[in-house]
Amino acid sequence: MAQIELIMPKMGESIMEATILKWVKNVGDSVEADETILEIATDKVDSEVPSPSAGVIAQILFQENDVVEIGKVIAIIATEGESVAPVTSPKVESNLSSTNGHNVSEPAVIKASEPAPQTVKSAPVAAQMLSSNSNKFYSPLVKNIALTENINVQELDRIAGSGKDGRVTKTDILNYVSQKQQGKVQAVQSIPAVQNQTSAPVQTKVESKAPVAKKETYATDGNVEIVEMDRMRKLIADHMVMSKRTSPHVTSFIEADVTDIVEWRNSIKVDFQKKYGEKITYTPIFIEAVVKALNDFPMVNVSVDGDKIIVKKDLNIGMATALPSGNLIVPVIKNADRLNLMGLTKSVNDLAGRARANKLKPEDIQGGTFTLTNVGTFGNVMGTPIINQPQAAIMAVGAIRKKPAVMETEFGDVIAIRHLMFLSLSYDHRVVDGFLGGSFLRKVGDYLEAFDKSRSI
Image (cartoon, rainbow, N blue to C red; front, side):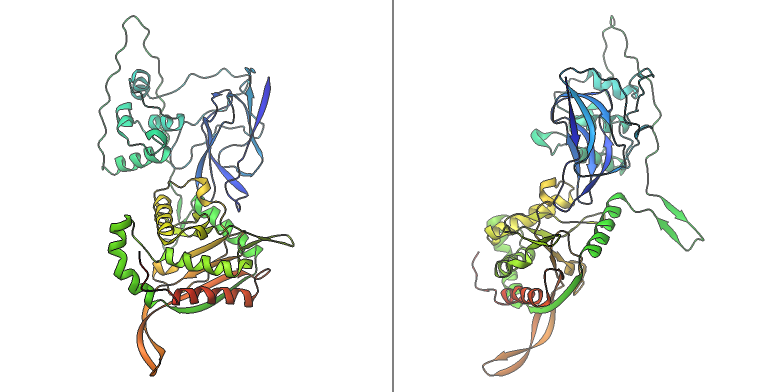
């Protein structure tokens, strides 16, 4: 008989803790290898933690909504047939609560002296689950959401799954629930379960559905409303404060003439999409220039560990992406220096699309060495971004605007209408001084201004 410690996994280089969203399994439950035990969240993504081995949950050391440091033991799994009494750590005394706005499963913590209660499910859905002839696989998490939301098996079977082998994921079923609440989909009438008359009827108990948790608001004198931060916003806030506390921020600015880039993109964007099936934006062009400049100034592509400078050989470019919720996430293009413009375009579109659809994987947000944020998408001409720790610098690009500008020609200076854009670089002044930061930013501008407008696709 042996016991295995379940460790809070590391979800990214700069992420040192995660929040437990929900325990899918309870003390005393059997688990298979790779079966989901709990859901966790960081300020970047939500993720499911699988079991490293088959066994029985022997102990749960933290409860839902607890913030746990990376590397800490969060549960004990007994293996090789070890008998486990359904007891839990003294830290977890009460029932595990529901999260994410859905009262999903709510497994009760059972003390050894108390008899185990019977499984409680709504009768129609429970009967459907037991009698279904569906050959589709549904994870315990998906089943629990279905039970809570009164979704029968016929409805589950018609949900298009985005997971491996077409499996329905948590995101798929929650999207379905949202569409159902908005009246965009129609519920399927459940088919009554047919039971053999000689067999005992299925005994079920109906449990009233707990109210869905909503974002709390507090009214004061009628002119002020206090809104509770959502979980992701709280984590982002903590990360931003930590970054400002860690790094002395300095920001440099330049203005670049990107007329040739604008004219080139306008002339090729239709043919580019026909040829490659991808829309080309300015972002991959900016990333291409950043990568060239990082090769020229590798000491910008660093992080700090105490009094040591960690020089990163990989050029992994993070791209800040706005989510429908208003929050931001930073997916990472790995080894961006090995990709041509087509490869960068495909990576940018893929990561941005999956970010907005909440389909990023933990590895998609890990390992960034430098970050680019486009404040121009909000109509802003410039910004002073906060460094994405543990990186040493972050660049912001503003909106491209037509302006009159003085141009030097062989016939003298002339005033012409040009497409101009501000670029700003915030950098960690502990390791990047003004000369290095300013030179790097100017180099990015030089590469943009030297763009070959006759470039073929």
